[in-house]
Length: 223
Image (tube, rainbow, N blue to C red; front, side, top):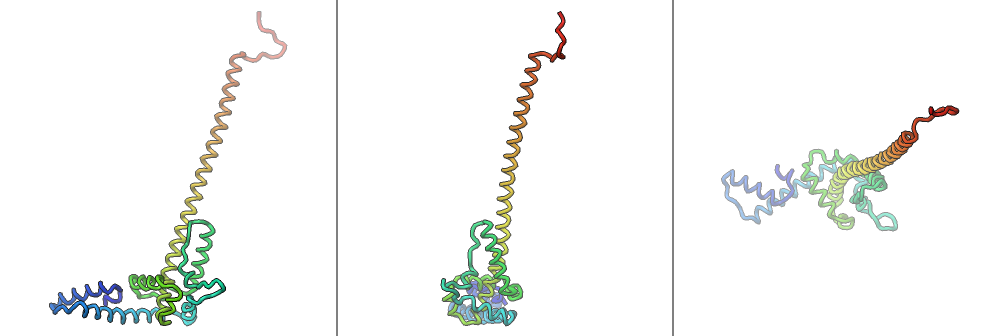
């Protein structure tokens, strides 16, 4: 069923129109098609979200719903921490991102949660969760909140891995560039030393040629 892989109502309506034309059936009014698409979409999404929850362990189902809860005096939530930006490619941010990824990994096996779920569906669910803040997310039913947050956690996990690899490559590239610059500076300094030695040696040779060969002590030049 197309609704299992597509989430945009317009896409579902277009597919329905194509099926009706192929079958030679009368095309109903747009409002009828829109209502049918919304109904089918809702039913399919409920089944997908229920399936995501069914693949989570009891501990994971207890852990994930608590992310929007406020903790500490700063009134922050782990749900907002889930959406943190990796920042610039610095070693401090690299370490923070690594810790963030370890924390996300600790939420559970996101790959298992989304087994059989079309990537487009998972992306739409994650986008819906990401567009919310902790307060509005708590307006959802717990079942839907768990499944949407699970999709967001899967997206964040993949994004964190990509960001971590990108940040590492940028840091290594910066280190390599600095090493090349330092090596070029060493070569320049060595070249200056070599040129100075050659200059001194040339001056010495010119002085020897000017004074003539050295004579042993006590010998007189021929008359």
